Image 1 (cartoon, rainbow over the protein chains, first blue to last red):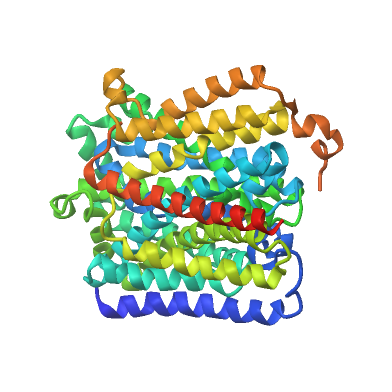
Image 2: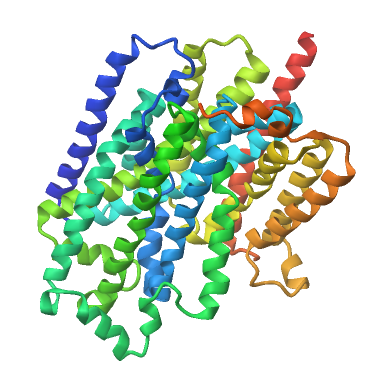
Amino acid sequence: MNTTLLIAVVIYEVLLIGGIAIWLTRQGKEHENEDVAFELGGRNLPVSVIVPTLALTVLGAAHILGIFEMSWFMGAAAMWFGLANAMALAVVCVSTGLWARRMGVTTVPEMLEQLYGEGVRIAVSCTMAGAIFGILTLETQGLGIILATMTGWDIQSGALLGGILGVLYVIFAGMKEVGWINLFNAILMYISLILATYFIAQGLPNDDFSSVTQYYSSLDQAQMLTIFGSAEIMLTFALGIVVAVVFSVPASQLILQVTMSAKSEATVKKSLWLAVPLNGLFGVFTIVIGLTAKSLPEFNELGPKLAAPSMLIEMLPPWLSVMLISSFLAAVLSTFAMTSLGPATIFSNDIYKRLYNPNASETHTAKITRLAIIVLAAIAVAVATSLPPILAAIPWLLSWLIPVMWLMIAGLLWRASNISAIITISSGWLINMLWSFSPLAQWLNMEKIPNAYAVLAVTVVVGIVTSLICPGNKGYFRENSTTANATN
Amino acid sequence: MEASTVTQLWMGGVIAVMVTYAVIALVGLRIRKNRT
């Protein structure tokens, strides 16, 4: 790709980020001391900002680079990755997102302290921050790959430029900044995706995708064109990814920080109707692009990693390439911003403010959050070249959050037992470690079973048994029925 | 599923971040205990 294109993309990102940052900084002087202004946008963000932020937070490198590559091997069944995230968003908008907003907390660990005490808060802080940081490293790698593809640079330089843009995305005004930039980027993203699909179809024989269908049918691979793929793909990939995502993402600081920032619970509920399709439909476009690239001989010979990006550059007019690449970059940058803001907020609120400086002002805490964002982003950039494939790594990371999801559901709706909580999270995290670092799965003849299944099974069994045996209180919402029914 | 070497190294890095947070928290707990 040429330098003009790169300059155009970077100018777009810098102008958008800079413009919104200046506007919010001017506004911010009036709201400097409002409650959690930096981390949660003053808990006052409207539907128009919450919708794109929910959709884009869980739409990053894996949705673009991962799905391009996956569709090469498993066809339209790769859509399950996108569907799993859309399902998780729906769960957030009807349950965990509302609960987090209702409890008036700033972080998920803070919520858990109200149910189980300080020990659980600290343990979950450390683990959740690490797991989200892991996603940050993968997003940084994604930024590096996208920019390297555009420029011919090495991934490290691409990651550095991407890291700088990512930090700028969040550092000036925090959550409010991420939200407003996302609104503009989500609009750009859908306009460019629809136009790109149209232009690609125009470049194919018959001006439509019938030649793509014929290609797969002629190879006797009609299953590549259906999201149900083969039975094996459904059992090993589709169900595995749905379990890993749906039982972890809804309990993550990454996504709940967005709903905590909403103006009201009604804002979160309304967001469901747009955020879920906005997120879920993205995969449809990337799969169409991936399948088409494989069906064209000139791109097929480039292999799964390069075929789709090369096709986009070759087949689209330059102005649309700029729009599309900018929107892909924006999708990854928004996830980068939230995955750096999440662990930084946990650090400033659950560790620094809770243990070191309980009287810290909002302004001081925001400074610590900004500092933590820069440190975390710098480490992520530094390790960006030595990382595993994005999709191989994500299920392991998400598995760390499955026991946290259990704690949230049990503690709010059923029983909150401190001892049970400690035993359950320890067991869940231990099995995740053993499944990856020891031959346990091999001994049990379960090598093909993903971490998420093992962690979910252990968490639920240990969680139920220990909750029944150990002393504890009624679930938070059962004891506080007024809070349980709150609507605002 | 047992992971490849690169993946295991990266997993080790993620765990190192978790441990760093834990160490900072434990130091904070100790300082707070000494204060009271």
